[in-house]
Image 1 (cartoon, rainbow, N blue to C red):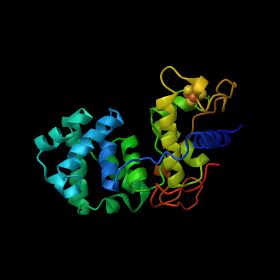
Image 2: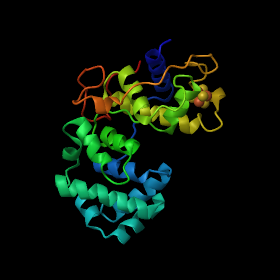
Image 3: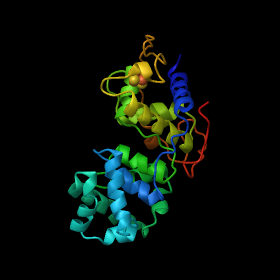
Image 4: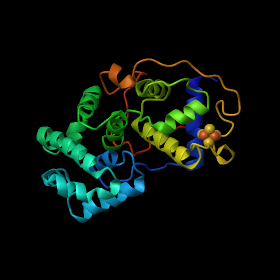
Length: 258
Ligand code: SF4
């Protein structure tokens, strides 16, 4: 079975098993973006506590958050861990959001997709996974998010070999799957759910919905590494297939996996 079919089968199997994960939780795109920055190196429960404190203070809004002094902001997000570093990262993000876009997140995340991505990557402390999470889950842009679980699951199922880069893995998904922000949203969330519950350091294959699929216990062959990142290569709201994307509100159901 080729890699495209194997990736589709993984997605279909996970969606049948878990249903729609309705990720990312948040009452607004701005809350999603803040959560994406705070979730670095911590678990989601800690992020929820930090966001709860921001809400309780009435500052979970671009200008209000930007107006806080560094100490106050760091103290409010303390439950998320690494709070001084994260306060600096949030401030750097807010400097661009409020300074260049008048606090309008939709504007900041709109326009040419590679440019919007580069804009985020230019902010201190925002790497590829965080930038893509913000674009996909807060902006509804069709970019596939790669994380450690993605890498682990594909590797254990023989779909990748060695250590492909973030961009190579992203390119693999974005060339194999239909270009659809809703689908990317669900697929990534399903991978995270599988990783958290089953594909841990010590895998729990016996209970996992992916047991026996796509090479795991089946001797599946490993494919070669892939080429440059789809997001950088393409200049418009299209994926590697060249199809126009269903772009806005990635939370809505898009292309079905099954
Ligand atoms: S736990 Fe086992 S079956 Fe499940 S994704 Fe990981 S390697 Fe595959």
